[in-house]
Amino acid sequence: MVNTFPVKTTLHIYTRVSSVAQAEQGTSLESQRDLGIKKANDLGFEFKVWNEGGHSSHHEDIADRPELNSLYVAMQAGQVKHVWVYDPSRISRNDQVASAFRYACSKHGVTLYTKDGVFDLSNPNDKFLKQLLDAVAEFDNVTRAERTRLGKLNRVRSGSWHGGQAPFGYKLEDRKLVVVEEEAKWVKRIFQELVKGSAATHIKQILDSNGVSPRRKKGLWTLGSINALLTNTHYSGHYLYTDKKSEQTIEVQCPSIVDQTTWNAAQYKRSREVIRQSQKNATEKNFYLLRDLMFCEHCGRAISGRMNKSRAESSYYCPNKERAWAKNGGSETPWRRGTGCGFDRAMNIPQTDKLVWELVTSLHSKSSILKEEVKHRLLNQNGVKIRTDAEIRTIQAKLRKLQKNYKLISETLGNLEANKLIGKINDVSYETTVQRIREELGSIETELANARLELAGTAESRKWVNWLKAFGEEVEMLDALTDGEKKEYIGGLVKRIDVRYSNDNREHILTLTMQLPIVNDGIKKLRSGQEGREYEVTPGTETITVASKKKDRRG
Image 1 (cartoon, one colour):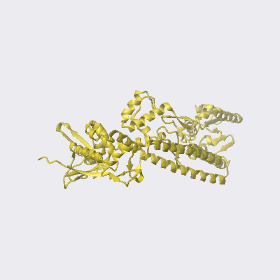
Image 2 (cartoon, rainbow, N blue to C red):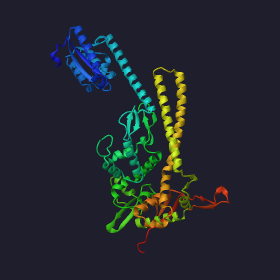
Image 3 (cartoon, helix red, strand yellow):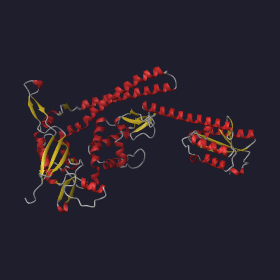
Image 4 (cartoon, rainbow, N blue to C red):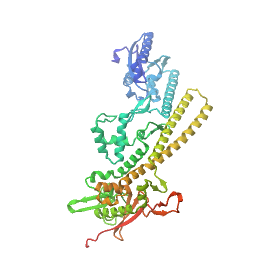
């Protein structure tokens, strides 16, 4: 206990280093202790050591420093009159904490000793000098932190990992991401399963049944960890790092695990799933052919479906009224027709499904574009030809080359800025070279963006090639498809269905937006020998409207 030492002839030695690593090494703490003991011997004092160990200066609250806190309490109790620290920064580089400590020393007549001298803080000159030394220590701390931040930023620019554990599928070598092949094959499998329509629960089952453990927590996968993995841009070959202080965002290139086309297709698939997520738990036991494609034209909400098998009732309806009712905590007055979003009557499901099915299959059977695609495996959409597999591979190779060049030039920029910091290059040469490097980086970023856009346009196009191969000329067999196959078929041709209710005519108006301009497309004959072809396909429009009149129960 403090009071077992003579108050006036005991030197209280406070030791601290700024990291746990330094504390474990021991030399710095031991040096501080030995110098403090030497000072006590010179004074002819006894001594007591208060060893804080490795405690970063980021822990600036005295309460976060148990030894300093105990010493502070002992000072206030009058049990301490002489304190030794290696230098003022050992107490704190934060002016608020240092000021509180100075005040306590001054108020209770405590003499402060350092390796550089003695401070009697009741003396105005010593007090002023101590304040200057504390200010220098705080400035040094801020400067060191800024150097650390800039160093980290330069390492990130050169492709180094910014900290923390590497994502699943990668490991760290020389601070850079390197693909782990055994994990990478499962990353590819996850993306492939999503693109072909597998639910996250099914993907989880595949991973768990094959003994694949997640990176952060050994054991079973969660749906959250799978969904988080699917949003991770690292797998497509790049990631973003944002510096918190400057808010500067840097795009860093890294080895890709999935190609850009698969990545884009997966993100498109996820965006479609998110729209319908709120409906799945309540209705997943029932099958709806069109619900996932339908939207209310009055309010924009996704159309819902309900089935009551005991009453032989099934309908598509806009959930605007019930969602608004729940959101507002109910209503004191009952709902009245004509007070909602405008979708005043539900649609009979069998009648609507039959109407749309017959319309879509009729469009298919008459479409010149679809027939031409089956024959030549070409697709025209707004005059742009779908890229072949070979063309896609060429773009992907270009993308990989651009990513490699971007990484090399970023490393050059990082080295240049490092040389500037240590004074190996003058300001004029630095500014000139930095300008050239940043212009080249900007040029490559533009090319990278263009290449990704090219591939983004092919993500759904590849799906169309696969769909046409499966369904192209089999119109006569469409009615024999299973319900699931019919839903996939319609999803391949129809992008969305907007529905509005006409109260005047008591009918629902359905506007189908097709994936391709196959509505009223056709064939145009060419002059003999023109471009080596006898005809060309002329695209039609992408939308078609049809009315579903409510049946009169009187027959």
